[in-house]
Length: 314
Image 1 (tube, rainbow, N blue to C red):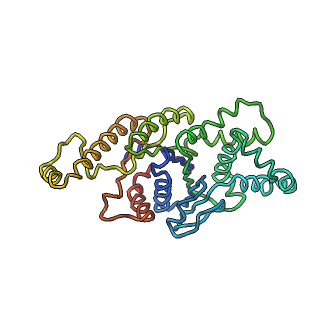
Image 2 (spheres, one colour; image 1 turned 90 degrees about the vertical axis):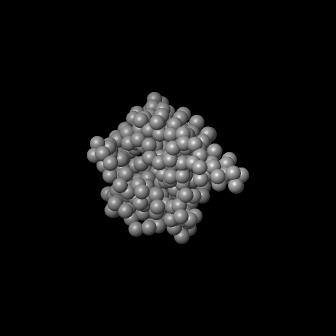
Image 3 (cartoon, rainbow, N blue to C red; image 1 turned 90 degrees about the horizontal axis):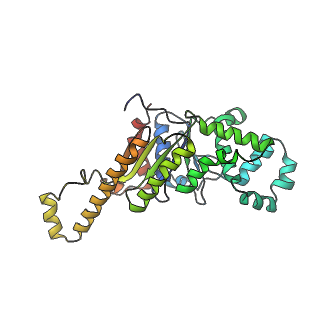
């Protein structure tokens, strides 16, 4: 790896279409950073937190759960974030109990455009900058398993759009802190995960320029997940004689081989078209189906982490 690679931000957003493996990649990145000696927190924002169960734990809640040495996971909750902000940070327990925590106020806050997203980003900013002094807990790296495609890009662009609205007080203060976090490449960066499938490719082609606009800089990398490069090194190759003979004997293999070739062509397209639009290029992560045997999620995370460990080096 070249020493000219730009550093990865302390808060690393993992983006991509639903189903491309964002949670797997987020966990693998977290495990890879942990292998390098960093204390890592993976932040989810989902109804069903998947990562902790892969490691034999119950789904994580708002409080961080350590699932492996130096690797923890949490699942963002707006209600808990509001309680922390008003009670623990501002010391306004009575206001929180009587007003903020009421059902009517919670419904109104969730319906307010951008409010929940702002507090999500605010929570990340707090974890990265203020939490060490207030809680004594320091995270060397925070991996964010961001919401799917369009929502994720708009999430990162939301603070800039909201800054044009008339606002003051605490709202303006939090907005400024979040903008500062997102504007600093040493503090935050984003990478995109894609699959070599038609719809996923189309959404990735749309996401990349949108993300660059919203963040003000290109993503650090494009991860091509479940790559078939190990099975199909060159999409232009014709069937080798042994495979041709095998396909003739087992007719069902011919369509499978054609599908692998098509996936390989899409991988090449993603790498050549979108790789140069990132600061670290495209990274192909092999499909677990081509390993020696089926891998459980935890084993897959460990295998990917071992591959990504050296890639993380500056």
